[in-house]
Image 1 (cartoon, rainbow, N blue to C red):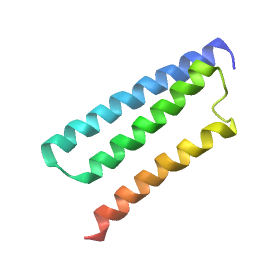
Image 2 (cartoon, rainbow, N blue to C red):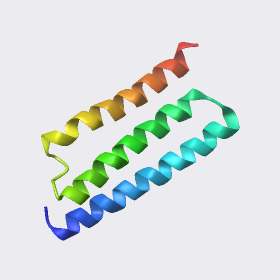
Image 3 (cartoon, one colour):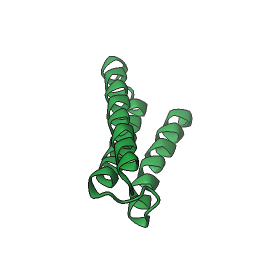
Image 4 (cartoon, rainbow, N blue to C red):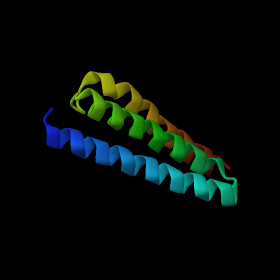
Amino acid sequence: MNALDSYLAGAISVACFVIALFFLRFWRSTRDSFFVFFALSFTLEGVARGGSAILHIADDHPLFYGPRVIAYGLIIVAIWRKNRR
C-alpha cells in the first residue's frame, strides 16, 4: 500500500465518521432505531478503513472482510426491522 492509498483510506474513514454523525443527528430527532443501525454500520466501516490506513494494509486484505460483513449485516437488519411493521 503506497502513501496515496493510505491517504485515500484515511479520507474515506473520515467521511464514514461524518456520515455516522449525520445518522445520529437524524436518530436524535426521530428516535428511530433505523438510524442507529446505519450509524453503527458507518462507524464500523470507518474504523476498518482507518485501521487499514494506519497499518498500511490494503483494503482487500482478508482481515477487513469481517468488519465489512458485520457492517453490511447491520444495514440489512435495519432495513428488515423497518419493513417488518
